Each structure stands twice: as structure tokens, then as C-alpha cells.
Image 1: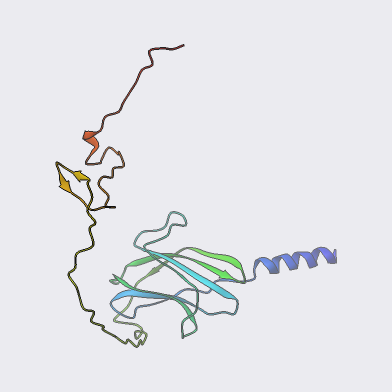
Image 2 (image 1 turned 90 degrees about the vertical axis):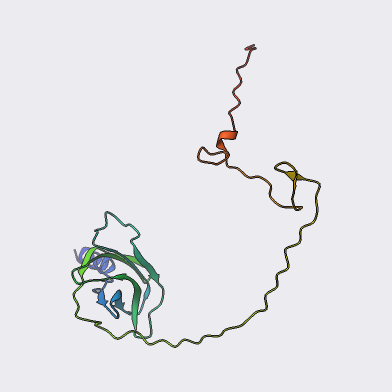
Length: 189
């Protein structure tokens, strides 16, 4: 009986080894959002998938997605985008996949409603260095070795240049020029 309880506790302990923390949403600017979870020793990847105002059917990729493979300088695994305009009331539907200690964990069917006054968090500070190198431009045409081949009524072409390519599909511009060759065998022996 003690062995049974010991094995049961062992397996329960193995299946509840990690719980994904709640995703924190921030709005550093009027466009976009930041979603993050805190770093935990053993965390290897944070995959975030989001869509605006439309729930997921299954594990679809989402309109805003990224696999984050390292925590940021603030000790958080962070997805950051500045693409969508997010007025108050916008619903962010999302799901998360986390790899922890070589095991995969899912957080699905989640949603977050955007409510903010202005920017709720200061933008992350970045340092940008711009280096401009001016390269001289030349107007030398590419080499064109002569060839005896001509096309479209005698126009010359360069050696090694592709003259014609067609995929023989119905939507192709050359499709009306092609006909199927259908043969019926006359001798059936």
C-alpha cells in the first residue's frame, strides 16, 4: 500500500512540474503591445501567438507570433510588437507554448482586453549607431557574350541567358499557344 501511494505521488509530481505564469500585457506606445512571463531557471522557450478580435479555432499560428529563446535584460521572456493600433476594448486572443526542462507546456484559449489611458510602460531604452558608407556606382552593363541564337523574329540574345520558360499551367500567358497531343492507337494487338 505504501508503494502504491509513493508511486502515485511520484507520478503526480512529474505531471505538475511546471505551471505557466500569467502573461503580463503592457502598452509602451499607442501602437502595439508587449506580452511577457517572468524568467524561471529551466525555461528554454516562450512561444507567443496572438490575434486581434478573433478567437483561435485550434493551434493556429496567429497574426502576431514569435518564438522567444532567451529572456531580456529585465529577466522576462518578452514578445514585443509595435504593428497593430490598439484602441481600448480591443480583445487580444492568445495562446502560449513554453518549453521548460525539455518538456512542453501549453496555455490555451486565453484572451486579454486592452484598457489603458496612455502608454502604461516606458519604452525599452535602446542605443542605435548608424554608419553610412558611400560606395561609388558604376554604370557598366553586364557582360553579354555574343551567340548565334536569335528569338522573336531575329532579335539577338546573350550566351547563357534564359530564352523561354513555361510551367504549362492554364493561367499561364503562353497557355493558348499550347495544345494537348492526344493519340488513339490504331493497332490494339
